[in-house]
Amino acid sequence: FYERDALATKDDLLACISKCKGFAGSKKASLAAKYVIEGSASPMESIAAILLTLPTHLGGFGLPRPELNRKIELDDGRRFYCDMYWETAKVAIEYDSDKCHTGATRIARDSKRRTALALDGTTVVTLTNEQVKSEDDMSEAARLLAKLLGARKRPSVFASSPERYRLRQELLYGD
Image (cartoon, rainbow, N blue to C red):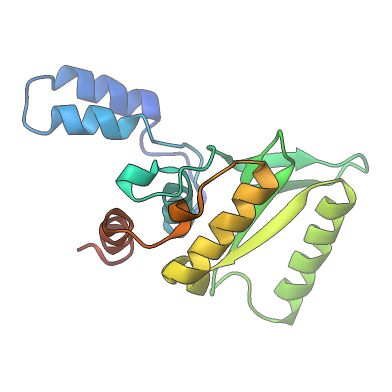
């Protein structure tokens, strides 16, 4: 993937949807657009954000929406971009892809980055490709995030459900 401007913004999508009122699917598109979170840098970041934030009746965990790829500036002048960031709780998620976060140099860089963010008061939670693809591991990560964010959730929110199964199938496997 290459870093580039978004092909469309949420406002672009909403404008297009409003021009299509009355057409098949326009109502569903309008409902779906309210869940768009701009700023993702990869498909797996988008998938993780969707799984974490969609309401439970749609298969998500219903957690608060983060800012995606939020720039964090430290007092010493360093700046980092966090894949997902909840400012009020100073909690970040870093998605460590299999491609971009392997090898001694990259692992060391990631560790230094997390240490710097932790010293600044930011709690960093790591998600890997394997975790996102595992229903149990993703549920465990969501429980941790809920705790860190102070989002009170019933235990049933983190249990398997037909809605979550359908969402995961569609997002991860296109079925």
